Length: 250
Image (cartoon, rainbow, N blue to C red; front, side, top):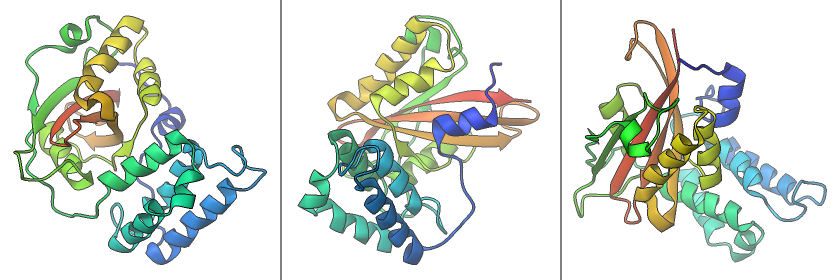
């Protein structure tokens, strides 16, 4: 089993749960402070907010007390979403990250009905090659028409029901980041490219791709296991394909 150090794994995912730090009364000012810093002439993008900067700012809402984005934080994000000047201050990829983050984090605490089932073929067949991703588990399913869309709560519940462990928060991931993430776990370029093609087949042109981390004791191995999962969501947000990869097991 290929393993990565905890430092490199966290660096790749940026997803593992942090201790509860605050609530919306401090997360919102912290977010705005990040935005101010990102628009500083001395920041990496100058007055333009880059994708890495908006992601860092939005993580202020994930690292506070509770789970995910609460109603006060959501309201603040709604205001920012409708702020034309703010939207124009971001790069295209940053605006896409903001929109995807806002969409998936709708504050609902009850998931919609999404049952995921294992696909019939093996990863080797689906990806067209054998390598470090051959042990990945792939499930897919859909929310019945008119019964909801894939949001944060739905993705988390569906992952736990299908794979066993409880996932961390699902965060948007770009196609480039997906390629890098999968390439880190296989030395076979054909396998990595095949996996990317198979996963993104569901998201189509919307590129609704999300990543989360997970860890568990006694899930698929006698001891501790951890890994990451990718979720691809269709344009109408009803069909979901998930792939879970174990990165460490003792």
